[in-house]
Length: 96
Image 1 (tube, rainbow, N blue to C red):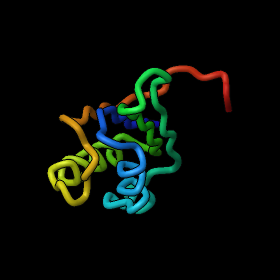
Image 2: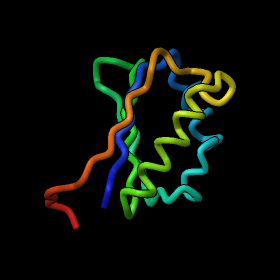
Image 3: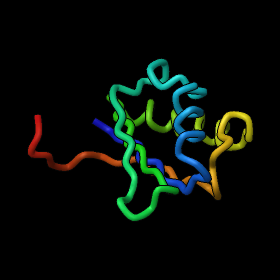
Image 4: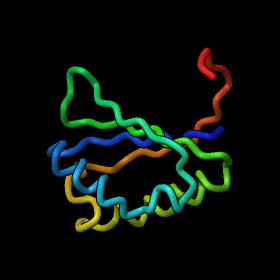
């Protein structure tokens, strides 16, 4: 399994979540098997999203799609600054 981790500052969580829910990147169609949204307990204007994929090619393609989404103020209205996306390979887990 490969995970794309995206982190960025936001202006407003409800506005960001509404844009996320509109799904301009077509997560399922892009191969996302599951995702988790997290926020630091001391910063309501920052989000971290982990999106799981079966393989690296899907993750790479998804990050390319996200670069296009982030460039569109209509698709990503609540972004504050430049998002950071990284591809992670799981090395060990204590969950199945």
